Image (cartoon, rainbow, N blue to C red; front, side):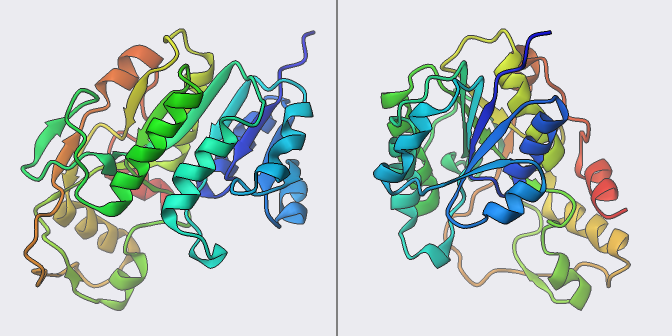
Length: 282
């Protein structure tokens, strides 16, 4: 029986840990880069490697690991690290993508915030990328750094990730605080389990490398609908909204996942916020 190839995860946080657990369940060795969480990662069966994506010297040992079948880059921004978001995303992915690993699949987790539509229109992978916010511009620059070093990498642009332990506006809704947002603009979401499953699909699918995919559920919905249902499931006061005082343009788009479903053979187990929230709060 052939031993499955190991996997390497940069950024074993909320999403990365779910991915790691799925890989471990397949009997695979999972390595993860961490600055300090060695004991925590070992406790769940992950092999920690101490290092920092902003420290090129600390990444040199990665080239000596057994050749991974999958590398996943899902590093999040940690304000406590004392480095800028630009450094973490653009320099970090540049360092990781040139550290000497040659996996079968290089999967980079980006964000749908790189799109800047404000009219509620449907957005696919061919839509213009003109981010409204600095974070979106940084992520777009990080994608460019990745393509320069790993042209066959797969980029997954994730919508807002939620799931057990991470439900949007939970504490504010439980307190009955008004939400200072436009409730009729759209939210695009993906349950963390579905996000992890699509990463594995990107490794094993027959899709050509070097592609970009939008990752979200099937049902972009209004904030009003999502937060009303969240409040109901939490047995909290009904969601109420205040118009934002800032009148600058705000993102409003409906992300399409059609390409990921068609090319990767993936479909979300939680096709809308209704199923996903119920599972997350059960």
